[in-house]
Length: 163
Image 1 (cartoon, rainbow, N blue to C red):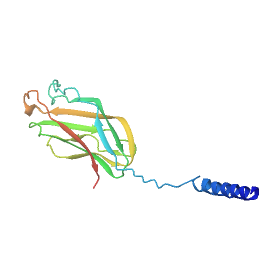
Image 2: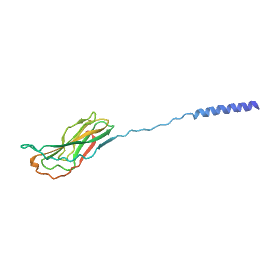
Image 3: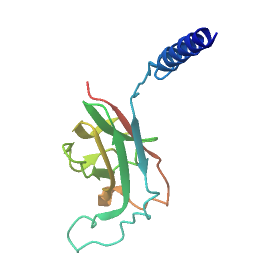
Image 4: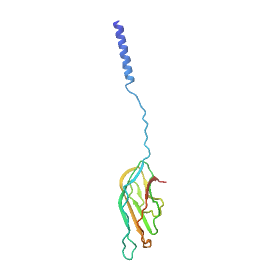
């Protein structure tokens, strides 16, 4: 009887050891994905641009403002930033915008956006995450513009595919 009990206990111990080993590890399949990230934000509205001085015998002096910035995050290649205003500027009044390029990108310099059409401002943007990139606005007018009352334009900056 002792032999049978001993044998039963040994068998039970062996079964427990095998069972414990079988549940000691397992595998799981982890599914993952990184989706396209394309974010662009501007720091706020620039101060008013006012053309108010000139040197006698010359066209009015330009006004400029470089106090706003933009931030960009993209994990894709071949991106660009475009800009446009919602309504054309008055005759003989020109609005320009310059965006400092993020690392690896290429700024187009001061771009005339007065006609309200989409213009490329920064090209050749590859994966980057940067903030505090300067936006510079310029306003010029010829004497033929006359006196233009205070008005506004909405500037839309878009991060899009470069094609």
